[in-house]
Every structure is written in C-alpha cells, then in structure tokens.
Image 1 (tube, rainbow, N blue to C red):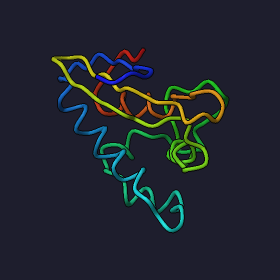
Image 2 (spheres, rainbow, N blue to C red):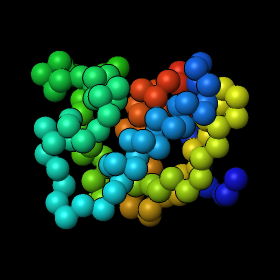
Image 3 (cartoon, rainbow, N blue to C red):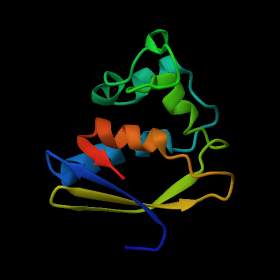
Image 4 (spheres, rainbow, N blue to C red):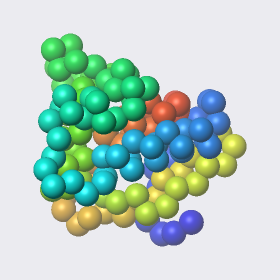
Length: 126
C-alpha cells in the first residue's frame, strides 16, 4: 500500500463487497463532468442502495446527525470542496483500508467518505 493517511473500516459482510460498493459510488461522483448535477440528478445517477440510506434534508434538525442527506454528501465531493484523493484501497477479510492523499486545501474532512463506507456495509470507521 502507498503512503498516505489510512481510513480503516471493519466490514461485517466482508470488505471485498464493501470495496466494490465504495468504488461504484466514487467512480460516479468523481467522474469529470461539464457541470455539477443537481441533487435530484444525483439521486438518479447514484445507486439506489446508497441514495435510500441518505436522509432527506427536512429530517436534519441539528448538526449532530447519524445519517447524511444526499445534498450535503454530494456537496463535499464537488471538485472545489474535496480535500483528499483516494490513492489506494485494499480489502482483506473484514477490513477495508482506503489510503487518502490530502489535496492541500484545509483539513482532510473525511465525514462524507466515512458515510459512504458505512452505507457500503462497514461498521466501525477509524
């Protein structure tokens, strides 16, 4: 694995399946686009298994949330908001490791990526 900051997760259903799901979503959200899609467009573009786990913005009552809204989640993946690149990924048994490289703009802010990893089937993310 390459050098960088590692986000590690325990995956109950196996890390291989979780990694496939993470890649499925990241391939879509990180693809170059002429214009950033609206939240409604993202709801159609992204896999249903991910979108259905996100909450509606109306459900968010305060800043302490246990689910991300789709609008907030995709906002953090806009090219000018992303604070990291995933440079390596490895699935071994029930452990998923994602190696991140900071982009140099501010704090790493991995909350949106951690939410994706949890939606993909992992429990504890460190």
